[in-house]
Image (cartoon, rainbow, N blue to C red):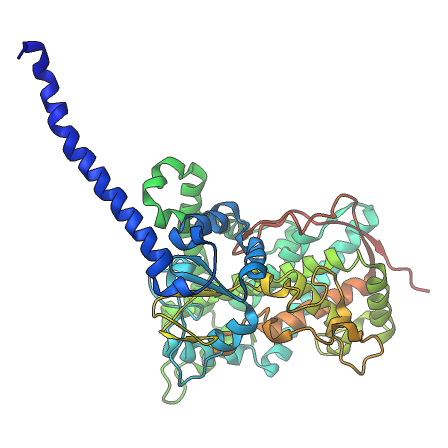
Length: 508
């Protein structure tokens, strides 16, 4: 043996063990894929084999590209109402998912929410609280959203709608194009800041976003992207951008600022206010029932602002995109509003409730442009679903966007047709839509965990839109035609500006 050959001995001796390790890993991965596709309990559910074999396609489309919420419709059309989209996840059409998953009776095992979906390590607030804790918190929060409470809160809401109209009138007089997304966000966040914190964000006053609101928007996409990196930790060092790291810090800072504002409201000694906290604190610990903890009060205040601001703003913006594009719909709606009242002062949350065509336009907006494109996932307790057993721990989810755009549920789903929501006795009812399946239309979710603030949201949207169309004629600025189609979804729509021209209404 030559001296020169000696240094090669370690490489030769290490080669076989390293190769053996790679073979073992490859065999294990192949076996895992075969198990997931062929032998896994979810293998009886249809779906693309690649999605069943690995988490990557679902996570990449959902968390990185932001296209999954819309791409899912193609999967439902090909595979049916229940589709397997990852090794442990099923997506379900709302016509099945809402009655069987989200609306289960109290005596049935619950499909529980998943804390990690919301970025929390454990259930705390009403968004993810476990069954009994959710029931307790929901009972307390319901006082803040009762009909009596809404009547008393309308003064706060009207103040900000008045301010919105004043700002828009000023912009209309200048002849400038107006970004309605921006102004709707200002309004809904100011209203919820007032109702939850007794501390508005002053966006309408300053005609600009509050830093806390900007922080909330900026961290939405990165929170979804972190879901991808939780599954593929080894990719994190290579693809975790500086912006994502900063967003994580901003998210933590946002929680702190939200908690600080809530603390200030809890310390406020003002019994004359009629905001959320007034009603919650009045009934907290009432009778034999356990009240909300201090920590629960803080996190619920923040959650109510985000949920109660972004969703109505999305609907208002979607409405302003779709309605002016349909001259027949626009003229019918304007005529209804302007003939129902003799002055703007008559328009209120209550009086606008009689506007049946406005209600139909809002419903159709929420169908074609759902404020929550995908409902937060649930985890199966081990239960039957559409006649098939879903093992415990399986993640199940409903996509409102896919359900509401499915031609099996709605005729001409890409057509904006408010007439589909009008009762048969209405003169504008269109019998072509009589076969539409409304069972899966649940923009505010369904069951005991549906949106506690849906009545507030509906009343607020009616008031804003009725007064907007009382005061202004609206048209889209050219080039906005694909505003909705090009949006990606990271829990919520990644929206761009919606530019319109406003003209003050000419009153004879």
